[in-house]
Image (cartoon, rainbow, N blue to C red; front, side, top):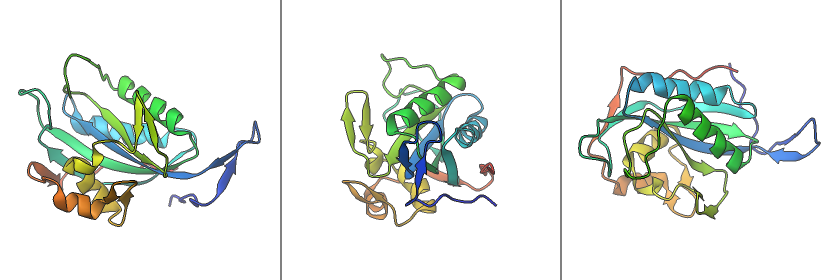
Length: 192
C-alpha cells in the first residue's frame, strides 16, 4: 500500500535545509503515435520514478478524437495522473518534457497539435499561477477539453481548475463527443 504524503506537510531538503511545500499536481497524458498504451504506462512509471514525486491516482484510459490537429491525425489515448510533489513548477515542467523526449516526442513548430508519441501536460500545480511566454499555469485550455476534464473528474470529482471553476461544471459545458472510456485498458499505479 502506498502512503500518500500529507498535502499540508513541509518537506525539508536534507542537503540545503530549504523547506519545500508538498503540492498536488494534475497532469494530462496522451499519445496518438506508436504503442499508445505503452507510452502512457511509461509516462506513469517515469513520473513514479521521479524523486520528490508521489503518484497518488491514475484515471481510466479514454480514446479521443484529435482536437485542432492535422486532418490525418489518429485517435489519442488519454488519461490523467494526480501526484503530490515538492518539486518546483518549472522543475516539474522540465521533467515532463524529458519524459516526452525519452518516448520519442518530436516537436514540429510548423504543425499545430501535431501527432505525438507522448504528451505530458501540467494542468495544475497546487494553486500556482504562471504566465510566462513558455509556461502557463493552470493550463490555458484545460477547462475546455473533455479529454482532460472527464478523466480528471473520474478520480477527483470535487476538483476545481483555479481561476476557472469546478471541473464538474466545466465538464458539463464541454463537448464530450469523441471521448470514449476504454474498460479493457488499465494503467497500473507503481508502488513506491
